[in-house]
Image (cartoon, rainbow, N blue to C red; front, side, top):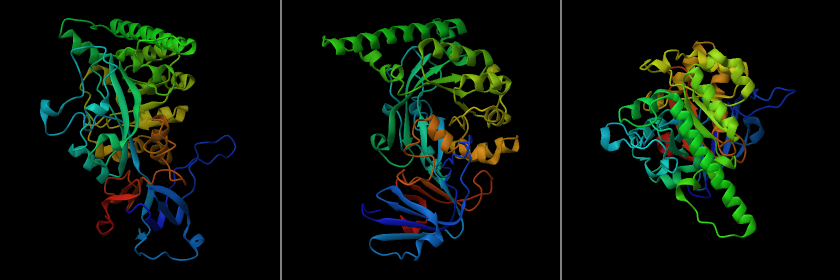
Length: 410
């Protein structure tokens, strides 16, 4: 779309997913525009409303593009809140696997953007499923694995796809670090060691951040250390710890450490969260639940179930849903949300979990997650409810550009 091109979507059932503050209810989803329009200018949403508000039917010309979606569902682009697309590439084996630097337990200074390959087939699969952005980063073999990035799903250069980089700091508890390093004959081989090593790293990082702050205030010379600079946005509260936790005890250990150091955190996977839903609601950390569309391949995921997301949502947690691609394929994300509905999660809650909630948890809600004036024009159009398996993606739009479907509008 040329920079000055205007693009209209007409005659859509528009689900904005924007919050409507009414009394004490902040999570209510605005009603659909049963027959609405949406205007895109310079990659942003410029207007949205009922068709009757337009007063005229826009015509396609040299400066205006018009897409009549003919009653289809128009909603925010779907968001994957935790995955490894492009960093664990499909079809390439070891040569395309850059997910875990698994010979060293503490590697927080690694950056996902240095390993994500947008040429990975998963990116096209995501776009075809209406998934327009994703949180991507290192795996969970390390106690501290490195920095995640929040990215768009269409493009060739990661620098241009990145919305937030860094977006979170990966830490991991439980079986994965234990199994990885026990085979190497070095720490950590116990949950005690995982917690102890993370505390030690955070203790040193906190001291480093404090020393740098005091030096800046006093005008003293300060020699920066690359391996600790990565912790500054964590301790300044700009990005959260992204904690790989499945089991109840690991969840509580992560919370204990985050509270000790006063850090923000997301509980990723949270597979046994439904067993402690009230306690987690009291703590207030958001949960990114999944992958539930996978086998119970290890002890700590024996209680994995699609009911978890709904139980945590009902308890009052902010919940997103993840495929953990490639553990489950990224294009199955809306179907995973549908299976959560089948297991008791309300439909509107499941839709929030893959749009607005995911954006808020990923600190990207100022850009994506709902259809509102001023936000990025990241839009998915479906011929039905995307949580149903037979629904087809009519078109996917990222930053105002049609990147899938509507062939004559590319």
